[in-house]
Length: 257
Image (cartoon, rainbow, N blue to C red):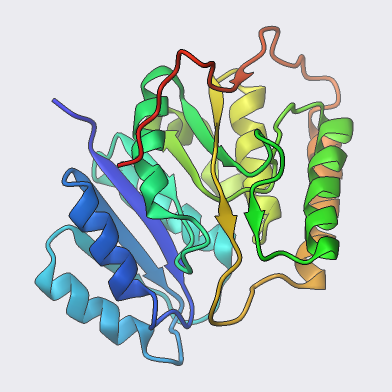
């Protein structure tokens, strides 16, 4: 019996993306379901999602009253997934910066892992259409996380990932307060500090072609604070003895779904 998988996709003003993204995922992966979490998008994304869910039984929708943030959206989705018995839970962006073709690679990699991270930096730099300052900020953020926390992730802020339910069950989700890209750092850090096996697989990240990026100065400031919070919170906690991060060897074949 295959694992029951759910992809959580937060949305805010993504009316042009939700239908093509859902169509591609549902058409390529027959055993995967989608949970959209919409923050009362003023462009009508929520109504489109309701129409989509009415026609596609594998699509589910949660409506929230306003723009409450990425982190709280994922925590809401994690709790929803755990309550309904899903075995695998994905995080994924709605703007096609995360290519659905990699979902098959995640499903393959999670067979021997507890958490799989899609990394932009396992094979050089795999980012399309970023400015140099944006790329340098991302690379610096990963180095910053490694130096302060000791967590050996090659891409600490990436948001394309897949959890086994036991990882989410082991984390106190109510204690995860970060809401921007620091949420990604915090969730991966908690999985690492608890000794779960974490695998990184290469992906190509595409800067969104339409809509507005959610990056802001406040998100960057929050990430800086959260890294130090993790450092002091676990200052005297023994780090995992074995190296839980690993990348695919040449013998590990992955197949795009």
